[in-house]
Image 1 (cartoon, rainbow, N blue to C red):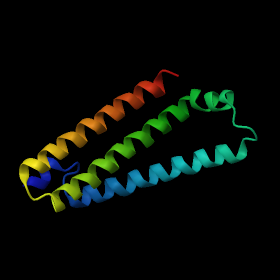
Image 2: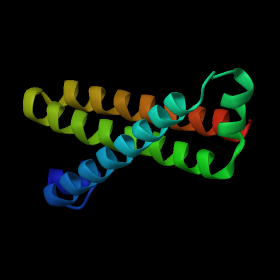
Image 3: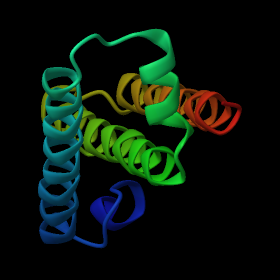
Amino acid sequence: MVATVTSLGRSGLHDWILQRVSALIMLAYTLYLAYFVMSTGDVTFAAWQALFASTFMKVFSLMALASVVVHAWIGLWIVSTDYMPKLAIRMIFQVLVIVICLALLIWGIQILWSI
């Protein structure tokens, strides 16, 4: 089956669950950052740097970044399989999405853990 070879999960249900879990992680991360900005009187570079210096925030940010990549890949894979009937165009698009997602993930890891 094509779905089991190219999709992220083992089935459509697994992809659906992965996308929902990744959305919850992104929501929690957004709410946490919003709370930080609203509860911090003056968001200075020092405050922002202190926030991202903690291991908790680095791991949480990495989880959010991985969630964005997983969410994007599943969504774009579904769109490409639904709306790109030509196999060559779909494969080129999917490879391009994979390369971009991996590049952003590697770049994000490098940024997060170099602080």
